[in-house]
Amino acid sequence: MTLATPIASNTSKSEDRIRGTLARPIVVSGTTVAPSGSEITGTVIDAKESGRVKGRASVSFWFDRLIVRGETHQIQTTRVLREAEASTKSDVKKGAIGAGVGAVIGGIAGGGKGAAIGAGVGGAGTVLATKGKEVQLAAGTTVTARLKSPITVAVPITPDSGR
Image (tube, rainbow, N blue to C red):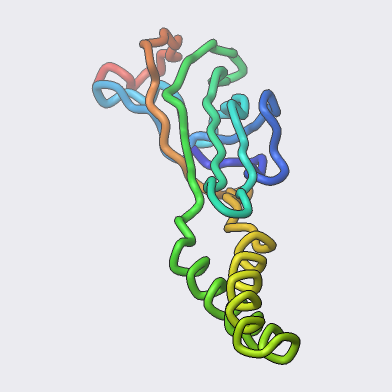
């Protein structure tokens, strides 16, 4: 499916409606049952923003309607889940930079003991103030979902369909 509606962990909400189209036709035994471009609609199930210390951003959704040649079919697809990349290496770097800056400030304020305190506070503060990456699926993004149960779609008979 190709998304027509953008979906993002920091802006989408549970129960938001989404739209898309089939990126490829659905073909059964050589017969096109649903042509590419057929409309598909669904719902955001859950969207979680990135946390400050832990908790990766994620978004999940599924599709519940397929429109083929003007006829609407109720469907159920598997859940599509996207999670942000883990940013632990990035958090370590941010913490190290914050600790270095905190140590300098602490050293100026209170000598050696102040430097140790400043390093701890600076490192933790930097990681706590920085959020991780969000999940963003722009319109035009292709996703894959499987039907959970079969559907029946009427296929028009054409003069050359028996060949």
